[in-house]
Structure formats: C-alpha cells, structure tokens
Image: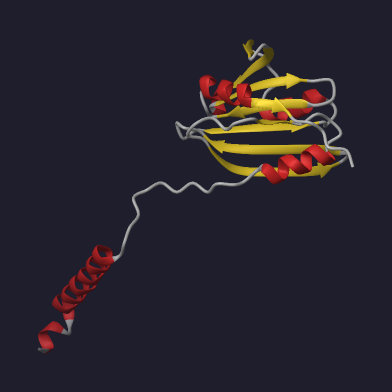
Length: 177
C-alpha cells in the first residue's frame, strides 16, 4: 500500500483519480448547446427620446425578422441628446442605429462610422444614405445628415442587413409636455 502513496506511481494514481472525478462531473452537469443573446426592450428609450430629444426621433417600426435588440442607451451630454440601439442580426453580425443632435453633425457621423470618407450613396425607402467603409475594422456605415439631427446605421453586418435596418426606421411623433 505504501507503494501507491509515494513517488511517481502515487502521483500518477492521484492524477488519474482527479481526472476521473472531473470527467464524471462534466458528464452529469447539464450543458446548454443553445445560443443565448441577451435581449433588451428599447421601447422605454423611444418614449424618453420622443419626450426629451429636441429633434424628430427615428426608431425601427418593426425589428427585422431574426434580429435581437441587445443594447439601448440614451444620453444627454454637452447639450446633445444621443441614442444608440444595438442589434445582433439574423446572420449574427452586429448592427447599430445611432442618432444625435450633436454639433458639428459631421463629427458625430465620422466618429460613429470611424471614417469621414464617403464611398458612395444608396437609396433606401426613397431616401438617400451616404455609404462609408472602414475596411481595417470590418465596419460599414449608412449616414443621413438631417437639418436637426444625424442618423447613423453602422456595424459589422453586410450592406443588405444594414439597409434592412435603415429601411425599417420611421420618424416618431414628438411628445410635448
């Protein structure tokens, strides 16, 4: 018996016993193989934006099929009201709708798109959007510079998904107190 409690053999036996215990633990522990993406309700931020933003707010009328809203954040800083709404797309890429009355508007758009270079334009729902690409970050952006606000749709999603998000947004009625 002393032979198994000392030296290399003792070490090997102790290691095998530990590994067997870990193996049994892994076999009996339930494991989920389903994807879990946290989902947020952004309706509260839409209501707050409609009340607090000094500009017309744009929000998805209907979230594209298979998309999951993962983050929503409204901020009031330096006199600007900004809202960022993030999504996991149906293809599990990232897309974000951001809008603000921050001035100068071009700086907000450049910061969100990570570039100031306009690479083209596209018509979505009868509206012209600037296209911007930041290849080293795998980021594509659609930008609308409105008189009172800037709307940016951006992310790692492909153009078709970003266009679907841009096409889903509708102007919300402003709530006055």
